[in-house]
Length: 110
Image (tube, rainbow, N blue to C red; front, side, top):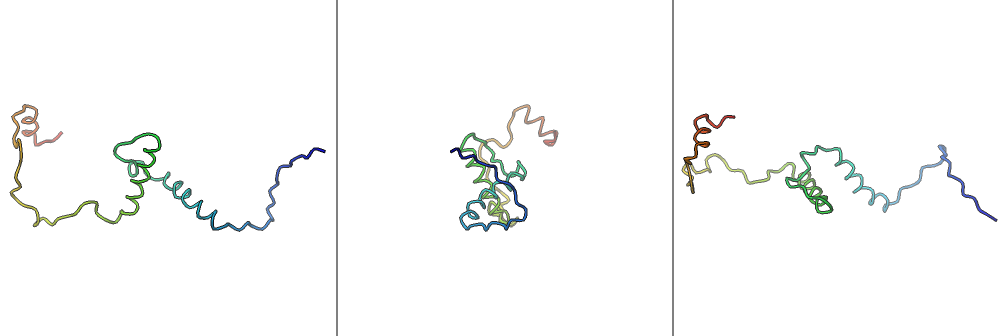
């Protein structure tokens, strides 16, 4: 006796199935990932893109940080009065390179 499998039919009048807590909790991260795919690439791609699993982890870490810290400054901000007017310079302050001197005369305008 052979049993034949029939394809299930779509019953539009059937009662909706209850979603279990486990199904809901496992689908939330997938939905979050799906929503992130619609975001701007410039916002969520880290500066150095690596391939494979490490690259995916980099993108997820950067996206999560930017999402969670979007309302906060990334670095400590100082008032203009906190900035020293005579900040010491180290090394060359006026290189003698011809290319630099040309850019200096042009006011560093392209």
